[in-house]
Amino acid sequence: MRWWDIDPVLELERAVFPDDAWSRGMFWSELAHARGRGATRGYLVAETDGRLLGYAGLAVSGDLADVQTIAVAREQWGTGLGARLLTDLLRHATAAECAEVMLEVRVDNTRAQRLYLRFGFEPVGFRRGYYQPGNVDALVMRLLLRGAPAPAPDSPPAPSSSGFSPVSGPTGQQGPDTHA
Image (cartoon, rainbow, N blue to C red; front, side, top):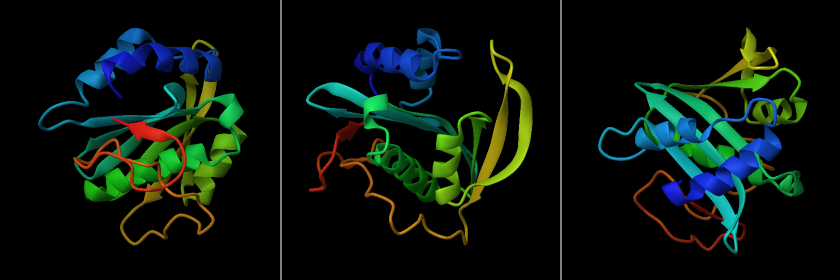
């Protein structure tokens, strides 16, 4: 994700998460941590023909990674884009030698919970009132990476380029283009 992605990301953020959307300042802060030496965050966007279809972010600290966000445009639900974005985040966490990946998901977002369960995440607790202003609880989930099973074989391939590796450009896979 780059600074010029923030406006379309904000538009999608508000459409997908209307009650607890991140602010412009939050995205700028995340991008500040995503660049340069020792970056602790990585964000990618998926787009086709210049139109944003989804985005995802990961924070890494030591051997722990935390999925910051995954959002997919509603018209892309069911296409496998969320799984491809999650796959790319998990590849980055593995490359960073993380032992585990954590995330929070709204307790009422069963669609996302099913995706995470398919990838091997397990519920480990709750954060009461985590999502504000609606005071909605978060389900905390964890995936152990070392010795953990690979994503389900029916998972779609990762996006066409990684938002985290120095290699960029298409890999020959079909689907939306992604970039950091």
